[in-house]
Amino acid sequence: MFQWDKSIKILDVPVGKVVHLFRSMRDVQLALPGLPAQEASAYLCQYQTAQGAGTAAVFHLHKSCQLAFYVNTPREVALAKAEAMLDQALTFVESMGFLLTDLDIHLLTDADREMLWASLPLQHGVTTPEKSPPPKPRPAAPAPPLPKAAALPATPQPPAAPAAVVTAPGMAVAEEAPAAAASEPRPSAELPAVADKSEPTEVDELLAAVEGLRARRPGVRPRKRPPSPEELHRRRRELRENLGRILASL
Image 1 (tube, rainbow, N blue to C red):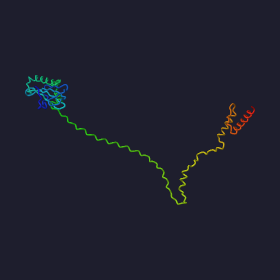
Image 2 (cartoon, one colour):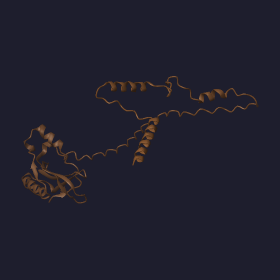
Image 3 (cartoon, one colour):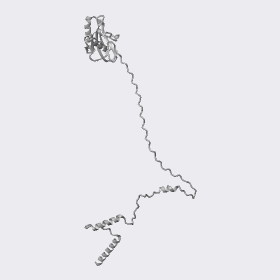
Image 4 (cartoon, helix red, strand yellow):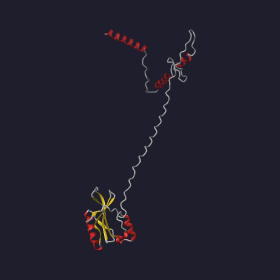
């Protein structure tokens, strides 16, 4: 019966003594006594000893980073019983849920045997991975400089009022004359002089010329001007006289 021998840490066997070597085709969730359930790989190795042959079933516990060696009692058997011991070991490992494949180490060349044996953790054990130190916090990036405030244009100050000048009675103040003159608007020399309304303007002359042209053109009636107040008064008077005669004749 195979049992866990915790005193065995590695399988210190040269590759020339290895007779059969098996390896699991996939990892299996395995829970060994005293250890949490975790993924594990399985190996089965039979090797030559001084008394005959030894067989070991080895489980590589990935999370615990250790090897669990299961051996039979007695650990070494005669060469005549080696094949029967190998069958018992295969049955035991497969009962744990593993599917083993033969690596055919006896068919390899010496160099390939050495390379394969060195690549497995059976001879040298499992190296515990060193914990990497926690990453150092990165220094905070300096805050970008604040943009400089744009210089505001200076607010124009109103001109200061002229200081009052105290003079004695009867004394003329000569400084106030320029200020008064500056406050009065000067007539612009560029503005045209306003024409006198009493004199005939060029517009009246132009209208008269247009009326003359209309009178000369046949078929164009000259524009009648509105009657003057004197003409209206005369027409009202004639109308009253005519109306009086008509009424007197009735």
